[in-house]
Length: 267
Ligand code: KIV
Ligand code: NA
Image 1 (cartoon, rainbow, N blue to C red):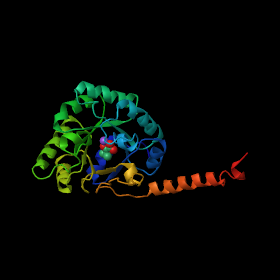
Image 2 (cartoon, rainbow, N blue to C red; image 1 turned 30 degrees about the vertical axis):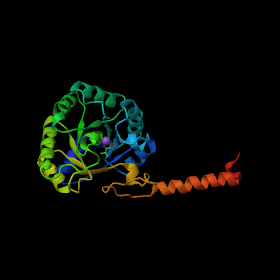
Image 3 (tube, helix red, strand yellow; image 1 turned 135 degrees about the vertical axis):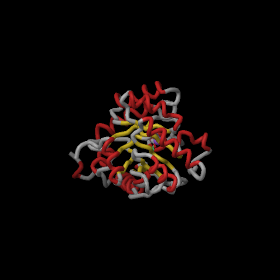
Image 4 (spheres, rainbow, N blue to C red; image 1 turned 180 degrees about the horizontal axis):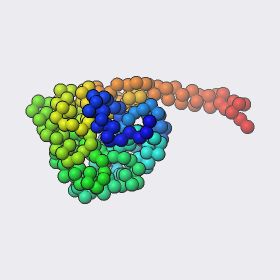
């Protein structure tokens, strides 16, 4: 089919259908996930810890994400391509957010952007939408606020559920096309989804959201090794780390022993 558009995601919620979203940061993953029919690709600020080797998502910059966005956008022919606003690129003012959004659509070639924040960012979302920049809002656990929130903790428990519902309603009223929830009790996420008419996406937010998202290196088992914690919400559909480790070991071994290259690889 053609390009997944925002109205297709809205229609999915209306019909009670689901859609899939994955992160992608380069050409081949974008091509493969696009071919697999994943509806939404996200150039996450999680590139900080899944591409650039940082401990958290905070250090990554717009200038670092833009080339990854271009690679994904050029390689995906069906998926809706969304870029994350990095920490520090939108908090100052609606004007700063509009400028950053313009850069992502103009230089990053993406179709929409995502920012972390609730009702406080309603004016920012409104300004962006008026400028023609589609916005997905990310609430619940927001990794850029890790230090303010006191670490990776489930959000929206108990009385806090009401706050998440108010955040989602304010973001919908401001014109956001989707609300993403991270690490929220399934019951709270279901209540948020029921309280708004735009689609929702969950990561560690149960099964009631319109869509689901995972970081691709988690989904495919590339991330791992000693001391690496895999979150409870991750399901691994492959073990790419072991596959690549075996391939690299075998290659290195064949080089050392003179098995590779053989006559068939030589001119
Ligand atoms: O940066 C990211 O990868 C994300 C998703 C996991 C939601 O924000
Ligand atoms: Na992110």
